[in-house]
Each structure stands twice: as structure tokens, then as C-alpha cells.
Length: 295
Image (tube, one colour):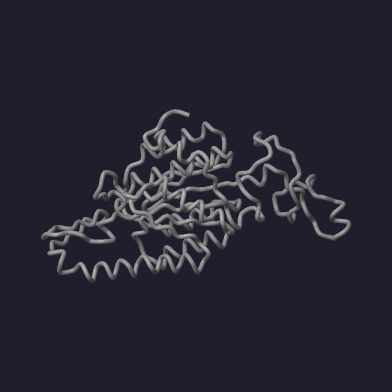
């Protein structure tokens, strides 16, 4: 694997032993604990599942049909491997940062870390980059060389235009055929109702969904101490004001926004994780995966 600025050795050393468990995916199988490393050649029988359109007739278990009068196909070990899809927001609002890195740089590091973990445990991972539309779509693969492709696209990606999260989510829900893990990484600066509907569409399709809400500390605390000009990065709209005049109302409104997103995710059994762009990423990942391990 070639070196990448998004996967420095110190971070990798802390991520190497992490594993991701996906809930509600592939009939409850534990993902990432594979008996055979040879994907595409594994023929170890795993379980039965109902016959579906597109399945090969030769995989129907006729003995089971004679007992149940229902069609089932034999599912093999390779079919239980996780397919993960990272949906990464590259809209212009992600191009803000009060510290060393912008939200977008932090989000790319998070995406790269997940890609590394997934491919290391021989699961397939794909990537979609979006702003007001999906700009790049890389299908999931599990071969080690695929990581270089994902990292190359992440490294060359730049913040784009305005946000349309719902459009990207609905497009993904319709385009992903096999149930898997969908990781959404965004600042969620869009209409809450439309965003939750898009996330619900993914859950309706049977995917497990994790939403990483990436924020800058300024967006939460609004700690500006002098008269300042605010510029909407996506629309160009400006306002000049004394922050002390609007801080209380802003903080309350933004908290309401975040609470509504968290509540909407909870109602749809979607895991919501809020991360600040100045937060230690490896620690955040470790805490999240430890929590998921206990589910």
C-alpha cells in the first residue's frame, strides 16, 4: 500500500486491531471474521436463504424444497462478506475550519480510516462523493489495491458547490442492490426533513446506516468576540453583526437542529455520531467501535 497523507503510520498503528461489526446485515452474521481469505473462490457452505430473482437455479437446495415446498438457495461463505459504502459530503460548507484542518479534510481522514479497516478485514468498500449531486461513484471491492484507488479519489477531491444530501441518499438507496453498511459523512447542513427521508430510504432497503455529523467547534459554541462578517460558503450571502447580539439565539437554534437530526436517526434505528473536526479521530473511532461491539 502506498503512503498517504490521510493514513499516517501513527494513526494506522492505533487502527490496525479495530474491527467493525455491522448490525442487521447479512442475516445477522458477524462481519469481518472470515474463515477463508480467498474471496471469489470460497465455496464453504454457510446457510440457506430464500430464492430471489437473479439467483442461479443450480444453487437451489432441492432436498430442502421437498421438505418445505419452498425454494431456498445455498448461501456460501463469500456471500456473507460485508459490502460497505462511504457517502462523503464534499459540498462547499465542508470547507470551513477554525483549526488546522477543515471539516472536509477531517471527513476525508475518517473515510480513509474506515476504508483501511474494512479492506484490512477483507470486506468490500466503495465511495460516493457528493455536493448537489453525486460527482464520483466507486463500486465496492475488497482487494488491497482498491484502497489506493479510494485514497487517490479522496486526495484529489475538493469542496464543490451547494448541498443536496437527500438527492445523494435517495440515489444511493436505489443504486445499491445488496444489503450492507452505509457510512454517511457530512456536516448535514441541509433541510432536516429531506435528510431524514433520504436516510430512511436507505434503512427501508435493509442497509445498516451510520451517520457521522462533522462539525467545527465554532459552529457549536459560536465563540466570536468582535464584530464580524459571516459569509455563507454555498450561497455567498453575507451578514455583518456583533456576535454577542445573536449568540444565544444561534446556539439554541443550532442545538435544536442537531437534536432533531439525532432524534430522526434514532427513530429509524440509524446510528448518529457527532464529531468535532478538532477531535482525536483514532480515539473517536475506538470509542464508537467499542460501543458497537457490545450491541
